[in-house]
Length: 194
Image (cartoon, rainbow, N blue to C red):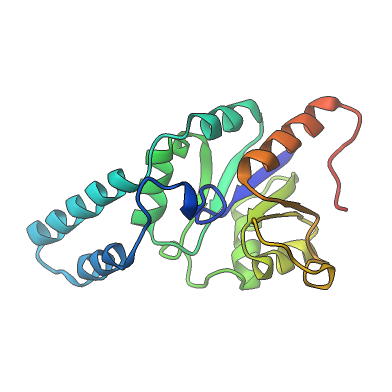
């Protein structure tokens, strides 16, 4: 059995595929939202954030289909805020597939701190092989040391010395999920670390 664990930004989506790129206006709205004490004003800011996200993200039928095809638990570990995490997953149409979701607001530390990954293992408590997808090589060092299968999602080319701790590299999440779906269903090989 496997756990499929995903980062969000530049992993489950890439900025170049967005309808409208996320810019500083969104981060400014986050700040206003976090500072506002008046409930009605806070709600008004939240509505603006959601409207802005609706201009940015769209339902990703292909990603939703790939998530459905993989019959194992799926989770999220992200350094983003709750509002970004849950709104993005919802608009992409894949929130329904996620079980454990760890965000910057649900844990005291952020990736690549070792406690984040150990906290996930503590919450999960299943002896499954963890497969972690992230767009930043430094976020894959600790999972590799913990015995997780590490998957880098990036269009960039890295030198081998910079990716010693990475088991697989794909240019996008679609290629990665198609690969793992085929490998899991071939029954020839159990997925393993490279």
